Every structure is written in C-alpha cells, then in structure tokens.
Image (cartoon, rainbow, N blue to C red):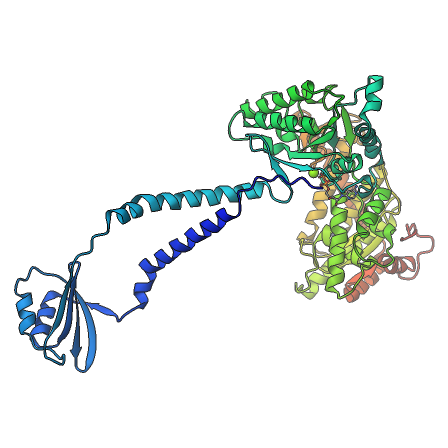
Length: 630
Ligand code: ADP
Ligand code: MG
Ligand code: ZN
C-alpha cells in the first residue's frame, strides 16, 4: 500500500521531445555532414582558367547558381568538376554558345538556377521559432535531470507550491529487529512507538509525549535506520527529509518547506517526521557564520511549527545529527527535541549482533563471529555491514557458494588496510626490512603485559600503502584504558623502527605511520587524559567534534604548549628506548621469526608465539603474554 502520488509529467511529453531531438539531428546532418560525402570533389579555380577551358573546348556542362559557377570538363580522358566565382562577363553566354565541347553534339550544356528565396514563413521559423524551441528543450532537460537527482531512490510527493521533496512511506518494512544492539536507544524509542499506537491512552491521563527526539552519534551507527524502524514498528507514515533540503537559494523558501511539511504531516497524523542531518539548519544562531538569513528563517519556522502543533495529535519528530554541539540551544529546550537518544559505536556484543543481522542476508557456513567481532573494535554498524558485503563478494570471486570466516577476516583487512597489492615488487633488502619491522612490533607487543595478543603478521603490501602490518586483537572489550596500557601501546608502535635500528642498523621511512600514531597518543595522554605528573588534571586541549574525527584545539598558553611538546617528546623517547632494549635482548627470536615471516609472507599469532616461547633456545618463564589467541 505505497503512496505514489508522484506528479511527474506524463510520458508522451518525453516522446515528443525525442522527436524534436531527432528532427534537429537530421537537419544538422543535412547541413554539415552530407555534402562532404556526396558527389565528386569540386576543385576551386579562377575565372580565367574557366574561360580558357571553354575556349579550348574542354567544358561539358555549366551551372550558374548563387553567384558561383560550377562546371565539368573532360581533360585527357578524365572528368573533372570545378567551381569558380561569377564574374561580370556579358560575353559569357555568347562564348558558351560558340564553344566546342567534348559532348555528343559538341555543345556546352548550360543552365542558370534562379536564386532561391526562402519563404518568409520558413525564415521566421528558422530565425525565431527554432532557436526558442532549442533553448526551451535544453532548459527543460536540464531542470528535469536536476529534479530526478533530488528525488532519486524513493517515492516522493510534491507538496504545495514549495516543491519540497519529502519521502513519504506509509508502509515501512524496517523494524527494530533490523537494528542490532542499541538497546538503550530502542528502549527510549519504544515509548514513542507505544504512543503512536495508542495515543488515547496517553491523552486520557493528560500526558503529552515529547514532541521530538534527537538521535545523536557518530556516522554509520544506525541513526537513519532506527528512525525508519520506529515508523515500521508503529505502522505509521514516515515523512523524511534531509536538513540540507531546507537550505535554499532564496530567502523564505526553506521556511515555506517547513510549513508544508508540518501541514501535510498534520493531515496524516499519527505519523513520524524525520529530519536527517538537522545540523544543516539547526546550527546555533550565534552569528559565528555571519547572519545567514535563509537558515535563520528556516530554523525559526521550525521552532514555531514545533511549538504550534498539538502534542496529543500524534505527530512525532525525530531528527539525527552527528554534530550535536553545534545545534541551537532553542532546539533542545523542553517541548522541542527534549529527548536525546545516544547512538554509540557498538561494543563487542553489539558488533556480533550487527554481524549476525547482516549475515542473515547472505549464505554462509559456520562463522566464528567472536574472532571477527574482536578484530573490528571501533567499527561502526555501517562498516560492519560493508565488511559482510565484501566477504560475500570475495566468496563469489573465489567461486564459492557460501561465506566463510576466512572471507570475513580478509574483508576486515581490506576495509582496515586496503586490498592486497599482489604485483608490487619489493627488493630483497626492502622485504627483509619490512619483515624485521613487523616482527619488531609483534615481539615488543608480546613481551609486554597489558597489550593485545598478536593475531597475524603479514608482509603482503596493501593498497593503502602499508607494506606490511601486525594485527593485534584484544581478547576482551576495554572501556577504560590505564596509563600503563597506553604507554605500552606507544612502546609497541616504536617497536618497528627499533627493530630496523637494532637488527639491521637502518632507519627508513617505513615508520611514518607509527610515528604519527605514537605522537598523537602521547599528546592525548598529556593534554586530555591527565596522565602526566606535571600537568595533572588540567585540560590542555579541547575536542571539537567528538563524532567526526575528533580534531582538537589548544586550550593553553603558548608557553605551556611549548612545554607540552617537550613532555610528549619525553614520553615517546622513553618508549623508543624501552623498545630498543627489548629487541636487543631477544636477537635470536627476532632472527628466527623474521626468517619465518620472509618465507611465508603471512604468519599467525600462534606460529609467532611458538617461536617466541621456545625463543631461540627457550627463555623459561619469559614474561610473554601468550594467553588465549582466540
Ligand atoms: P547513520 O544515519 O547513523 O549515519 P545509517 O542508519 O545510515 O547510519 O546506517 C548505515 C547502514 O549501516 C545501515 O543501513 C545498516 O545497514 C548498517 N547499520 C548501522 N547500524 C546498524 C545496526 N545497529 N544494526 C544493523 N545494521 C546497522
Ligand atoms: Mg544517516
Ligand atoms: Zn610499523
């Protein structure tokens, strides 16, 4: 029971325009192209030669047309065609009548074509009507393709005269079952679902539900998905529009769209209005972005509409954003978006649940969900969905009919590090360097406590530019990380370069990514986590947008900033020193593991730990974190 009131222009219109296009193309071909192919090649010549050829009795036929003279000759047994300009020559006719000719009767055949005058009607058509028509069709074609792009991929209705494209679904198939994890969000939203099911129950008691709920979280955590699921659960129409659609070129248009939207939704109540990416209009009006009239008007209209409609009628407004800190305070006050639904990145169990939901849609054998979920710490729902799809594609490529755990593991790596670059040629020395570098990371990780076990080491280059990498997979889920853990992580990051230095006496560019990560981590320890004795619990940097990259800006004086740099340097240097020490103390293991890696190109955590355990002659009771690998 889909509503499809699309007001597209009728089909025959486009057939007509195709006809016109065809017509135009034929005319163009006639004018430009065909004369090049038809007839003999016509050579230009001068009037003197023309007269000479007449007098020598070579000319067969003459046609005078439009001030040009076309004539054919027979010279030396061959036929030629010429063109020359008409000269003011009163004797031409006489000359032609008297001339000899290679023709049968020795007479030149000659004609004069009367100049053609286009009919005034045709002239008018060509000069005025045709250009107008062409312009009209080009313009219409362009504006239609823009509309098609705006309305692509859904059934939409055109509202009133604002032309807002609002996706209205009356039969949403998505339900809460499609949204894995996110139980808190579902809890909050199920009250809204109940209200939409049964508004009377609430009305009788005099309660009015929150008019709006704001879905907040990083990209890809399922905000759009869960909003649709609320409509699916409540079985009410779902009006969705993106915030950016309100922002128009002309002042007042956005506000008109808001009015339209609420009027239409009011008629269809109970229903859900969903405004995706609301930060596009809801940005704080503090003047930072220099009085954007249109956006301000649109926002004001939205605020007015939200106040204006009767909360007991059953219109619920959901909005989503990943930049909640930029929203105008007026939007968040009670009576507007007063409920805030937090959508966080999924934890271990959440990731398993999301993988399960998406694996249901592909054919698969027995899958070790645990290992995949642990390898994807920090991934969003959208990334997990992508990983499952990549795995299915890989299964097809390999000619299999079902997805296996190996497919999923490989696609995790593809999503994290890019596809394998099979044909990149590394020289022998380079390969050796990469192998020692990666084993360096792995060994340092293995020798420290509080560090995630090594899962896989590989020296197959990836399209992301990584020449190899060491995959560490945590056995559990960490919510808090302590100072020691973070420092150990920095030590592990410096392990690659340390191995190059200690084992091969080389320093390469291969550590650039490690350096970046180690520095960022050390800086965060000092400026944000209060983990330096010197600065204690003072905030030295603020995070700007928590959900989008999390870039920071300084919150301290330049002197302090310079000192922070020194503190960061001290931490990284200390870590580097420690890593070098560890590697220097385990040269045998380094040599054996690197040789093994060079030979196999990819080795598992167990294989590596086996080498570490009997460590070039066995290091009894060495502090190896050889715990469960899976
Ligand atoms: P957002 O709006 O938060 O950026 P979306 O709702 O557009 O994210 O999510 C994108 C896709 O990611 C969804 O279509 C879905 O396939 C997948 N996804 C995200 N979160 C979940 C989840 N919790 N459960 C199942 N799939 C999810
Ligand atoms: Mg979204
Ligand atoms: Zn490295």
